[in-house]
Length: 171
Ligand code: HEC
Image 1: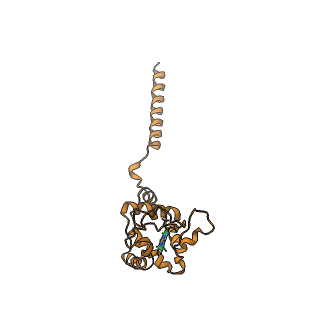
Image 2: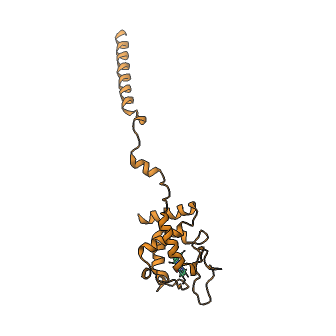
Image 3: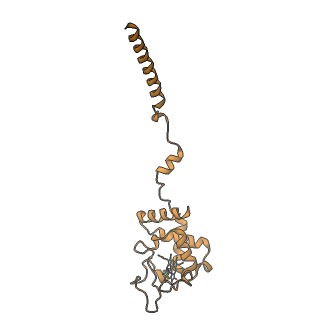
């Protein structure tokens, strides 16, 4: 009987030690593991880029000379711009936050400016656009600048949506 108790006691001790070892292996030490830089960039939303004031100023000049006659001096677009003209041509939409320019990512907007109405050639979109082919009139730098000027008129929340869209389509 005494021997049996001894064996039980010994066995219990062995089990206790095994359990202890098992626990020691399984216990994570979270406080000692800092997040890696990759994890930080994935979980944090980068802040909205600041628009270059010189580029905005250049874009404003380009806009006044080339776009304002159709899209309005204050980016307001033509009156009743959602209605097509009798000849099926589209009216010039606003570029401020009341229009749909900000619904498109950068690459589409640059294409729209560079190709103008010619980008619809051969496509059945139910209307025509008399917007000129600015890729033949303006430099790439002027096209980027005029887009930056347009963006500078958008409130931050709208600019953030358009910026996120542009970043996603670049990937
Ligand atoms: C002769 C008139 C005219 C001029 C000048 C003009 N546009 Fe347009 N633009 C239009 C019309 C009409 C549309 C709508 C049909 C279309 O998308 O082509 C348009 C559409 C656009 C769009 C697409 C907007 C969207 O939401 O899809 C952009 C961007 C644009 N114009 C930028 C410019 C810029 C920048 C300039 C000056 C460099 C300019 N336009 C000069 C007539 C003009």
